[in-house]
Image: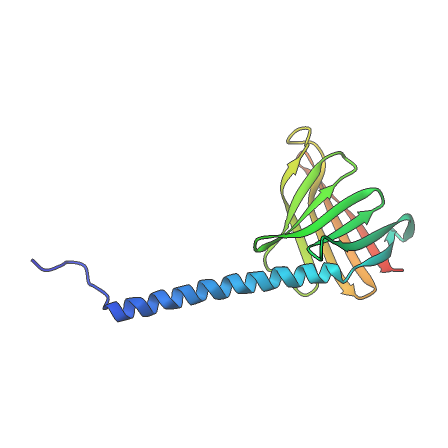
Length: 169
């Protein structure tokens, strides 16, 4: 009785499998390189930054530092702390917020050209699902001396943004 499903010759099947494995390895390598490049961009912020908002300079500073043998970048925003680090093929940040909760954000794929958009994927110590928390943070590296920062808060169903310009001191 003939086989009703067509068969792929073994050599062609092996070639297809090899191509699929090469594509998967190339994609993983590219994701690894993108994550490493993004972390390197944040390492490049090391130092002190003046914070401007609504045309005024704030009394607090932003301070970036590198720690744990180069595996993390810390961001001190006044009394708040954020830590950037790699988690597999992702760049993640944990934000220790003055609101008393800790959003964990992941860099969205496709962030490029000096623009890095982080989206919250969970929040520890959140009082309730509608409690205020950081939902998204966007960094735009304008040049070596300027960074534009947008912090998007979620409060129930509403969202509002805070915008800052950082200037290297």
